[in-house]
Each structure stands twice: as C-alpha cells, then as structure tokens.
Image 1 (cartoon, rainbow, N blue to C red):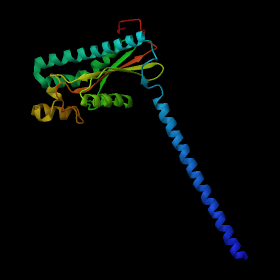
Image 2 (cartoon, helix red, strand yellow):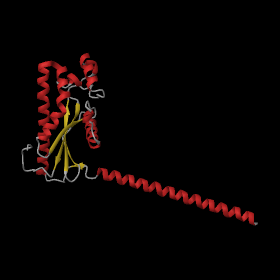
Image 3 (tube, rainbow, N blue to C red):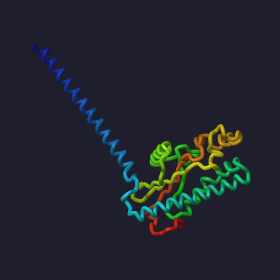
Image 4 (cartoon, one colour):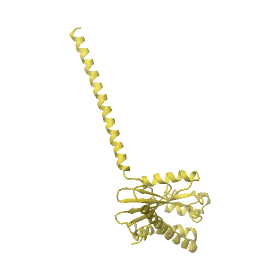
Length: 234
C-alpha cells in the first residue's frame, strides 16, 4: 500500500471512529434527558396518591366528614342565594347574582373554616377561576368515565403532600341548574345573550338533570386540623 492509499485508509478509520463517538454521545444525551424527564414527573407526582393506609380508619373518616361538611356549607350558601334571586327576579337575576356572589361567597365560606379551603371545579367550567389543575383533571375524568357507564361515584380523598389532603365530592345537575346550564337551544334568548356577555369562554352548557356537573374540592391543612374536633368552623 502506497503512502496516499495508507493516508486515505487511516482517514476513513478516523472518520468512522468519530461518527461512532458522536452517535454514542447522542445516545447518552438522549438517555440522560429521558431519565431527567422521568425523575421530574415522579417528583411532580410524589405524595399525590389516594389516601388509604396513610391514616387510621378513624382519622380518615374524620377528614372525609370534614370534607363533606365543607362541601355542604358551600352548596347551601350558593343554593340559598340563587333560589332567592330566582324568586325575586327569575333566571336572569339568578345568573347576575351568581356572577357577583359565587366567588366571594366561596372565599367567605373558606375564611370561616378551620384549616379548610373549599371551592368548585369541573371539566367544563363557566368561570375560568374554577378551572381544574392536573389532580382535579384526573379525578374528574375518572368520574366522567364512570358516569358515562352509569356507575356510582364516591367521594375521594388524596394526599397532596405531607401537610395537605384534598377531598373531592361530586356535583350533580339538578332541576334548578339546567335553567342556565342546560342545552343552549333550550335556554331563553335573553339568557344566552347575558351568558355570552358575562362568560365569553363559557363551557358549562348542555347538561341535563342527573348529569355529573363537576366537583366540590376541599383542601385540608393538616397542620391546622384536629381530627378529634368535629366542628369545621373556627
């Protein structure tokens, strides 16, 4: 082999080695990135699991009871105000009152609770402030799948981290609800105009009585909560 041929042969071997090294580095880089992404997902989900053996049956029952009580408190407050508005001014007045008082009333209920924060969420929200987070979405979608199969839905409780537990209770559509959450073609024209003006991104229509509407969500601060205390109020 002359010098020129030997040089070309050596050059080809070096190129092949360089390509092999580059491919190896690329593979290692991708594997490292995948590992980091998986670790990130695991960290995001760490501690977010349905409460089972984490608490004794007695403590779990106490927290479930507090979640139910907080949900009932919010439901009764909103329902009372909406029924009064309906009686005095019909569905248009009820929608106007709901727009004005729903969020402040929700905050007021939570302010009066001891270690609890109650709110509402849904897969199809009317007010963007009630949009679900990732944990909400998982619960709501699971419940929606069950509802589509006419299977029963039970309240759930999840451990968010070492200091917080989150309780969920389903909200079902009642006769009063369909007056402004029913199918668009069944709503009054004035009501449709009002809803479009008040809630440009409204997705909470098309429901019928008995449909799963969403969920009450109760955040429990375990550092402030006494399982032995039956009252939920401060």
